[in-house]
Image 1 (cartoon, one colour):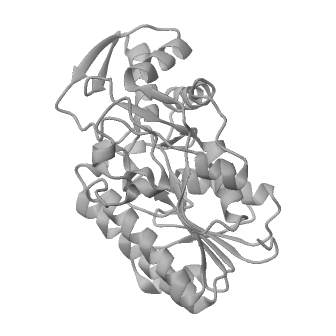
Image 2: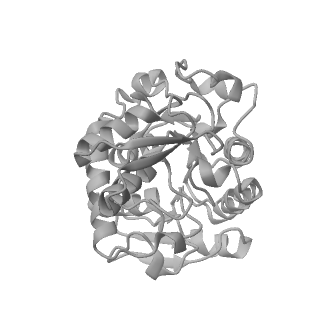
Length: 337
């Protein structure tokens, strides 16, 4: 990518987008436009020397304004959250298809050279994720299609849109499939948080309230892999600067149960809590892990940060937020991915 040409990051007021803008600045990109639906004061990170734009990218006019004169677009904008959100807001998640559709059309018309769509492991077929001892998911396991209802269908459809815009109009596309990204400067309360941040918050709450208990959704034996934000940003840049145009896993292969996730956070915090299991709460698939064969073959790289290391950084940040009068996380709606 030409560091002298305009780069656009959508969802820049959210979690991954905010970190990506910071990385682009570190790498010397001279012209960056950051776009998010939230007012700037509610962005998770704001950076000097960046053109910040508040816009609703579900609207086609907003997309044309967002990508005007751009050479590269990173689309990380979506109405999304953790399992508690996507299982109860399927229609809202599906409406995000307007964002990618209008951005692709606007990018085609503006002559954008390279376009990245942030996809998700939620595209993978549900019947391949029924066992906690899950076989790691290869890219081809998205078909025959049976993705996460709502959110996963939007992601899978938008992947196909990217493919056909490349075939028909020549836009060079990149499609990383994120696997449960976590880390500092992400949502940890309010209903959109994902498991690592939620567990960190609950452990901090238990310590602050002297409650000695923690609620866990499901029986705690469902399994996931979780990818630290620094690895995710590194992977995004490697994929964008490669020739990989097909969807590709961007995830850790360190598979753990939710119970083990709680163990690690307890060890970091120096506590041991009584666990109460809510079997009626949203749980998602029984097991999910990333097969990194393709990214290792093509890039000779894969995420390397251990869950123990990443959670230590995440817990420390969340604890600071909760004990120092941070912004109300419940008000930080419409999260970028």
